[in-house]
Amino acid sequence: MNKKNNIINKRKQKVRRVRVIFLTLALIFMFILLIFGKNKLNSYLDTSFTEAQGISEDRIPSLDEEVKGPLSGKKIIVDAGHGGSDPGTIGPRTEVQEADLSLKISYILEGKLKELGATVIMTRTEQITEQLGTDTKLKIEDRGKVIEDANADMLISIHQNFNEYSSEIKGTQILVRKQGSLDFATSLQKAFNQELGVNLKYILEEYHVLKYGDQPSVIVETGFFSNSQDEIRLQEDEYQERLINVLCDEIKEYFDTIEKK
Image 1 (cartoon, helix red, strand yellow):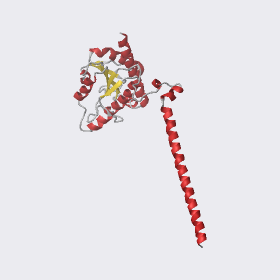
Image 2 (cartoon, one colour; image 1 turned 90 degrees about the vertical axis):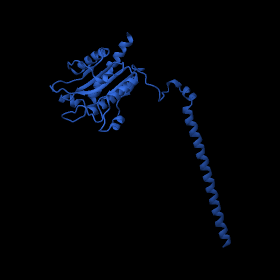
Image 3 (cartoon, rainbow, N blue to C red; image 1 turned 90 degrees about the horizontal axis):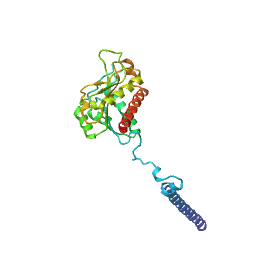
Image 4 (cartoon, rainbow, N blue to C red; image 1 turned 180 degrees about the horizontal axis):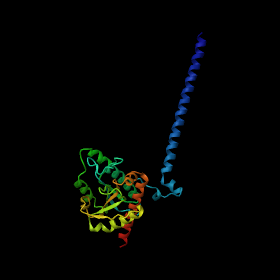
């Protein structure tokens, strides 16, 4: 009986030794894999590796690197009209609010301008709109402070229009205050007229938001909620992109002309 127990105990001890050896080998193997994997990763990040592959360091993009484009070095303010307790004009058919649509179009404009290399400052954002809630509106003086502090090269204020006397008038109309902005307003209105097949004229008035700063400043009334076609298509992504493309092309053309003088 004792002999049988001894045999069993020896077998158990042998099994334990095998398990210990196996676990030890497994740990060693995992350690080797860890070191090898780390070295391999480092080789991808190493400058010598990139150079060996024909990739120089100056060709590796940085997340903080500014986008280079035709508007590089330009600072443009994008002002989304209304907001908070001020919904602006409301579409009579779809009940779309000017404040909401202006903000959406302003974000599209911001993205496009950044793609072209510009630095963009927004007077009203989604975060600011949420902070305003439904009881407070963004004061014109607050917009003015952002504009004056920015020392920008241009101000674009996005709005939608409404004509109380005619539902037939449609298209994008430019509003301007300063004589120094007339050249840009003229070319911009002409470009939108050609694109949309309309014959609108820019309006020169004492618009409050346009009095701040020394930069060329215009209000872009993207369309008329009083016109059924405009009210619908202004909410369509494709049409919004179409308007933004016209606007950005004219902004580029304006700065090109200025730099050539």
